[in-house]
Length: 130
Image (cartoon, rainbow, N blue to C red; front, side, top):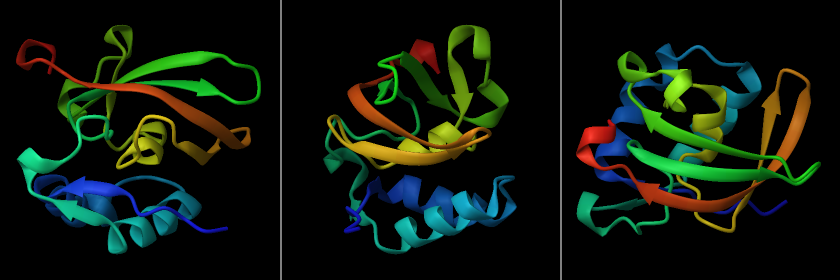
């Protein structure tokens, strides 16, 4: 399967490289992410396309299984709050989405097996939503 290069801003790339090894995630997800980061296309922070999932974006995704939709706001671990749909960027779903764009399909290992999702929309969070 040909994998698409994920798109990362320089600050996201730096952040991921510094924190990846310490993050708690399954071996499958960690090795996949390590590979993706290694092959990522890197952009200056202000040049990253606006529909790429990164820190401080909101992603709406749909399960290709059952068309269920989910909305996630990717924030720093200290700001995570599931009631406000804010998830840590190290949550499995955040890592699955990071660097992908609207329309992309992603596969990710969830507790109940590997699932496929389609990214429906992505938007940047306003300062007051962080």
